[in-house]
Image 1 (cartoon, one colour):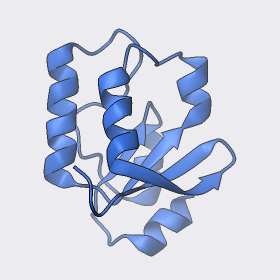
Image 2 (tube, helix red, strand yellow; image 1 turned 60 degrees about the vertical axis):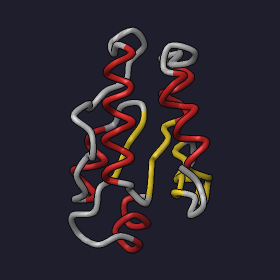
Image 3 (cartoon, helix red, strand yellow; image 1 turned 90 degrees about the vertical axis):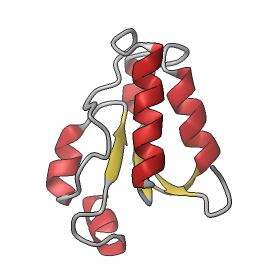
Length: 110
């Protein structure tokens, strides 16, 4: 997964990891485009979600890593619905590494 991101993005390109695996940013040597490292249910306010989405819109990372196990274990839905809806509207799955999905920004959305 890290090799996939490194092979398809330049050094320093932003990488968003959802809901929580900041070590992947470190391993891929790609910065998180938001100020938030974790999206556990109940930890962000509505304005925080708006800020995270605005930061994603500004940075427009090519890839999002969706940790599906984390989404299920931490039951992030519906608490994080504004962000997950944004991600699945603006990105589409292009690869999978076990329960980690690689989402790529749709060229014609958002």
